[in-house]
Length: 425
Image 1 (cartoon, rainbow, N blue to C red):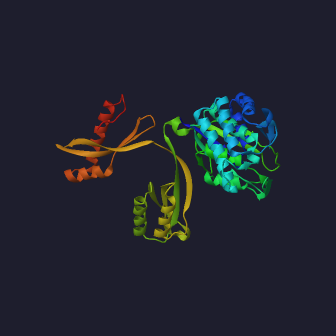
Image 2: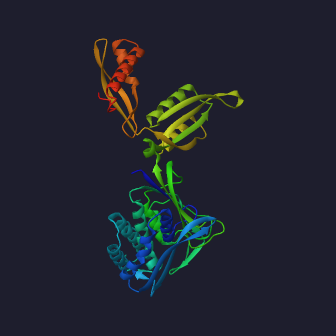
Image 3: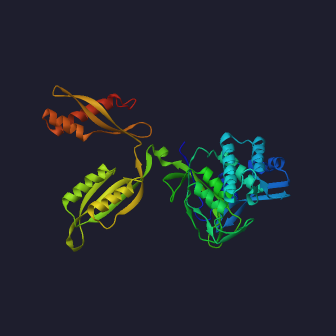
């Protein structure tokens, strides 16, 4: 629990061998991958020799692991049904757990489905060329074994944008613009975020795209807030002048597990206005809160030509910040709204509970806001303003007097419950 994995193909894309090599660099069991060759020999016809190893290479000044596979095979094209049978056979010969087996089948199935879709053929009968070689099976099953040895199948997984490359690529069906049809279709189905990249050539392959989209749960533009543990670098075949041809995979732990608080992304909206009335500002303030803003601040400022104005600052969720920005523009007439995305550390558990008090011989209920950390420890207890105000009005006493009684009661209850740190009402 709390493990996080970041796959970063934003510079040099991703291929099957780069993904597997990155996992070996992270510390995956190298011996099990090397031994995979003997099982593949028994399960795939037309192959007389397989040798699997890893070497250290330099790509763009960075040391990385590189997969080295020597294969002697009669042909490199096979039908989809042959590859499915090969995976089934290999799974019996190596120690593939349930999650690793599912990952292998899902990755291969995606490749076959996309190839069949692109070429208008049946998935089992389509004759595969580039992805029909033994290399593809080694990339898929090897990656499954490596992920299993690192215990990463249950991690929270994110990918940075996928670099595609540029120019043209020549393969068995002719010359196509990069990315190849199968690659871009796989990334589309996986809802990937993509970027062209800094070099011409095919940076991301169909196998790499299928492995990535079947492993990660989310694509994002930036790294989240987390505690680093390990970094792995996997090298591609080519050595580019402009970029290091490497895939980086980073593992760590979520900060919310380390510090017992939740990490979340929020958006802060801001705009400066100087040509509106206080009534409009007040109305906008209320509308923003009623429309889902977490908080709204109005800050008096002086603007150009010594005009008094306001900075309106809104804290919003990622899901509704665009709607709140629209309200700001339409209600105030401002010409634009600034926005920034921040990671926020917040208490993970907040609730409102009633507590019964006796005030001047009258029993009344006050609502309390209780916040707890990830272990259930109480961080803060605060009376809800509206319920305190209502009691003060009903009993004809000051708000301050009601608050004093409430806080004395809270202190008494929390002290009596200090052993289990639970507030009972």
